[in-house]
Length: 250
Image (tube, rainbow, N blue to C red; front, side, top):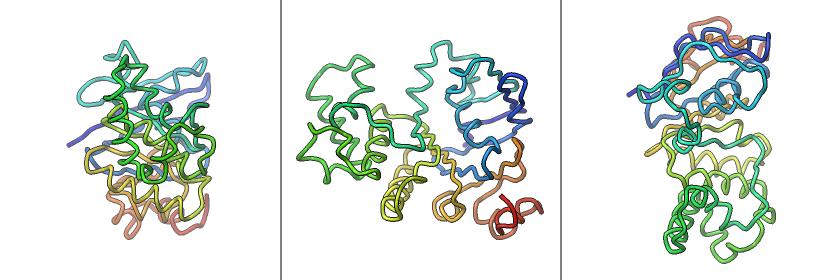
């Protein structure tokens, strides 16, 4: 089942075009990796999906982005409704300056949930899903800034999970983490795809091979190749893809 469909998507920062006629289908409950050199449009495409690019002056979108048969840019007058369904985790962990518990509960409180018992249950469930509960269950009231980098990133994932999103977007979530913390995030994502669609931007091709079901190679804002990960890395159809995955450029 197709969850997200990009149909001739173009994106501009002012007069500079960043994405060119992107056509892409993202499948339900799969992990899709976006790879390519810096500046190729990976993060821009990711941010188009939940309209994060709208905060940038003079940005412009052309074409269509369809999510469950709704046009992301025409059928969501209230963008906050869209972002409840499509959560995002950024490259650098960004916990809020509050306790671990309040970080996870933040989005729920914004939605108007005040029942303390319900909040407690969802916080615990979300931390368990993020494989963080056992590490923090006895110190939920301490500042989130006292956690390690890897723990902070899993906390940010728990914060997203608490609002029960349909899709999770991750923009290089492991780039600042050590191998052990990275392995924990990767293990977590493999579990989460059982109930959530995941799109991840990564510069690490080994990571894309390890965790993704589908991989899209972007270059200069254009889709060069998109297929099942095993096929793209073993038998790429485009010479540009082959050169990139062999380390010849990028």
